[in-house]
Image 1 (spheres, rainbow, N blue to C red):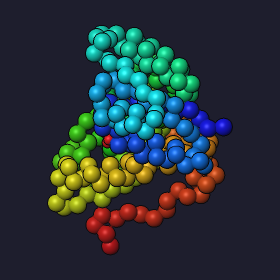
Image 2 (cartoon, rainbow, N blue to C red):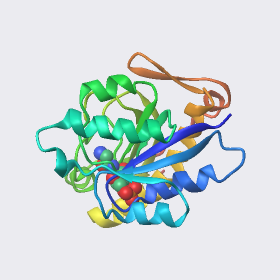
Image 3 (spheres, protein in one colour):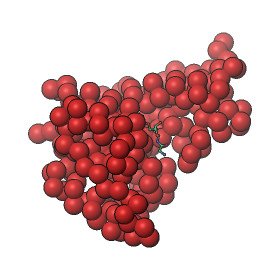
Length: 219
Ligand code: GAR
């Protein structure tokens, strides 16, 4: 049976769209039961409704100083949709330990850097400033810290000498759209299992762990 997923977003929802597209494949082990946004007119919500997906808004501004109240309402909507797995896809609110503990092992996030480098905002500008030759994105299980938790999958994106934050962001975003559905499938198939602070791969995922180095500059 397919797992029912809630996708939480705050903005344009391109990663959400990549997950929705993956879920259209009859072989994919999950289906999207809900797209929930904390921002009332997020472009992603319109995209999801246009695709016939159930959507919900829980506006965080109505819950000033009441993060528990905000999360309780999100929890209610997620339960009402019958979802038992959460994908954070550009959801830009910090979650309390109560919420992250309740969803431990059943909530994953995508972040535009090779964690643990560059958690937080402006990851592409910070990567360029730091001089790294290889940047990328990460899908991880969510724990109580921001942009942290056991790493499921990563994609490496070489930095070009003339990159700006925007050109680098665009190449990383393309990789995000490939990586997120791939990582979600591994988790739902039971091939990527949380084990303490790490993720253990098994089956096809383990066999496919890449073994070639990415050199930048190339040889
Ligand atoms: C994505 O780049 C995602 O990795 C990032 O927000 C963007 C959302 O874009 N998430 C974070 O920074 C989480 N800390 P999208 O709405 O087009 O998917």
